[in-house]
Amino acid sequence: MRSMRWTVLTIAAAACTLGGCSGWQEARFKATRELTLEARPGSGLDVATRNGSVSIEADDRASVLVRAKFRATTQERLDAMGVHAVYEAPGVLRVGIDWPEGGREGNEGASLEIVGPAFDGVRVASSNGSIRAEGQLGPGDYRTGNGRVGVTNQAGPVTVRTSNGRVVLSGVEDEAFVDTSNGAVSIDLREGADGPVQVDTSNGSVRVRLPSTLAGELSADTSNGSIQLHEAPTGARLNSVGKRRLRMTMPTPGRASAIDTSNGNVTIEFGASE
Image (tube, rainbow, N blue to C red; front, top):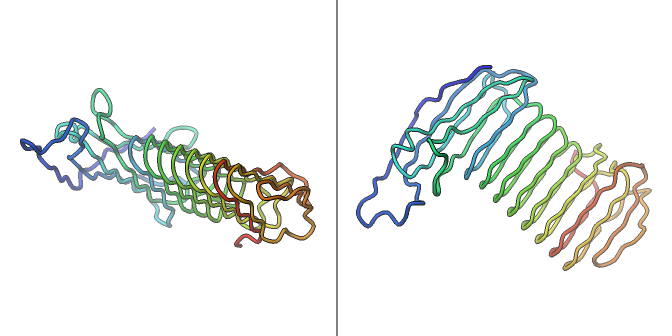
């Protein structure tokens, strides 16, 4: 196990003056801290934070850069905040926040930016904040209580769960699962992928661009909206199609795909980007 210590880069603190603090929840004290550690090819990534965004980007560097941006209610609490990155067996880099004694308070939070070679398997959890991941390998599991999720060029299955936020998946090379209570969903599956695609949103439109290689059955339902199908692929069989319901069987057997929204339109296109 190897742990890296963080280094303070900048601290910009605003002092509370009489009449200047509107409540205990304000997090006026801010700092940016970062650490750099060796990259280990084939490692996975496990990231956890609270009340903050997470960004993961792949490039050709030989190291991993972790940058944390903190917000705290007092200077003392800000000084006590830290970020850790530890390689743990079996080959997973765990990145998380060290909160002051007693845990996070009020509107305190921490955002994370991670840049390095593509990780083989990514898991991200934030209680409140957006998530962005680009160019990663293996399975991706992205969860946030409230925030937008965007995943680009993931070479593996992707699972997204957010209670309130838009979800955009682009260039996914495997199956995709999306569950959001309130937000639009857009999915672009690469040509050659066979799915499945499963989408469930309570309130939001859904747009999927699917490859002709999608397998199994495809169903789509909306309680309040319409379904639009743009040219089914050759060999596909339309079993049922209506304003709010669609059933289609693809030429190749496989696991079923399903799209369901309670309040929004569903748009289905075939001919995904290569």
